[in-house]
Amino acid sequence: METGLRSTQTRETRRRIILFPLPFQGHINPMLQLANILHTQGFKITIIHTEYNAPTHSNYPHFTFSSISDRFHEIEHQLPTIPSPDPGHFLNYLNRSCVDPFTDCLTGLLAESNNKGSIACLITDAGFYFTQAVADTLKLPRMVLRTGSLSCTTAYGVLPIFSKSKNSCFNLTTEDLDYEATVPEFPLLKVKDVMKMTINPKSYGYFLTNMLKEMKSSSGIIWNTFKELEEPSLKTICQEFPCPSFTIGPLNKYFSSSSSSLIEQDKTILSWLDTQAPKSVIYVSFGSAAQITKSEFQEVAHGLMNIGLPFLWVVRPRVVRGSEWLESLPERFQKEVGDRGHIVKWCPQQDVLAHPATGCFWTHNGWNSTLESICEGVPMVCSPCFTDQPINARYVSDVWKIGVLLEDGFERKGIQMALRRVMMDKEGEEMRERIRCLKEKVNLSLKKGGSSHQSLKRLVDYISLL
Ligand code: UDP
Image 1: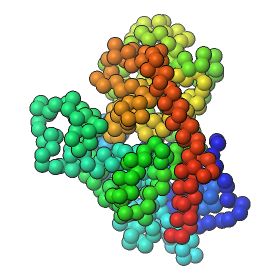
Image 2: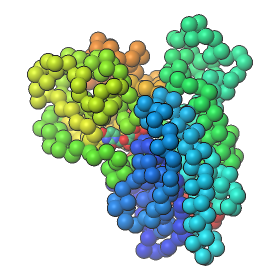
Image 3: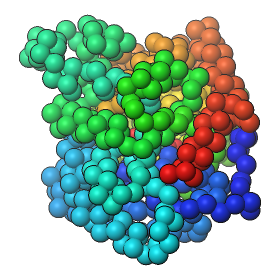
């Protein structure tokens, strides 16, 4: 890809870095991309990973891997889906169950590296907050990779639902809440956006509080974003977090996420896209973790049937609660749609977004998907489901104005109107133009002298001195 990244591998061999991703697709992809980037800069790489959602070692012959037991099987039965709509519960569980195996593993790796100081640092997902105490005990500097946006991290710091502020509107019972009201502490968001983030503010709040606290105690934060996209939030973070921040993203521009995909990507779909007119296809995917109900699934299907435009729809197995795959598709769907629409289980998303035929991305606004869409200049229709997605969606629709938010969930008429606005209206053309400008800014930031390029240089120098 076109970046100012220059391999120093042949010039210089640096020390080893140990990385530890959270075991979810949206976290594994950026962590392995970061590992590849650091490898091109001469660092040796070791990945510690859980048994659950282990990466494919053979795709990374240049790394070494250590697997730890996460005792995932002990909680699997408690959760109807993983991660469940109570992500805090599962994340806090992982932060407890991994303490012993991770500590043993890291202690072993440090003992093996007989040359004292040959391990430069540990880089963990910011969500593995327990690792700060382990790193402190073992006297190893810990940096974090924050895979979400700067803006959502600033929002997490002030949202009253998580910080339990006394005068918060969230102290009302659910019936008394005004869902359309703006949240005074973060006026970009409406109460209904925050209510969507989790069904259990207690467990998620506990997770976020610990994550933010240990991010502040870390030796530095690596962000998967670029300065020009989130400058005001970067300022806030730099004021509130004492450690240095490095905005080196978007990481997917350096290395594709295909090699870290946990599900096999259906690449045959690219030849169908080749037969479609430029910017004519709606690409639909709700990522690796979100789930929808049967009736929401049917509304999506009707929306796509009624809009009359070509589409590529990723229906991940079990994305529909209680269904294995396509059982709830309306009977006449296939007949009505014919070759105009394609459904796959998983696809090479970055290649699809980069394809000239793709005209719009109907997305759940996971941060990777949002960034990947920006990188390819594809405007969005936003259907956020949980965690950071409602915040990302507000930025897409209300701040950057590069997409339309489906405010009232999945309903066929609203779906059709939103898709029409992006694909056919003048407003859609304006969004396309704005996101094209952002795409240019991405490319500039990665070129020699650009903000992400400079930040990466700073990061490499910083790690080298740890
Ligand atoms: N992805 C993919 N194929 C698909 C759908 C998604 O490879 O069919 C990748 C996508 O490129 C992105 C990741 O899965 O890198 C999803 O991460 P995101 O943060 O967008 O959402 P999450 O899955 O964490 O909710």
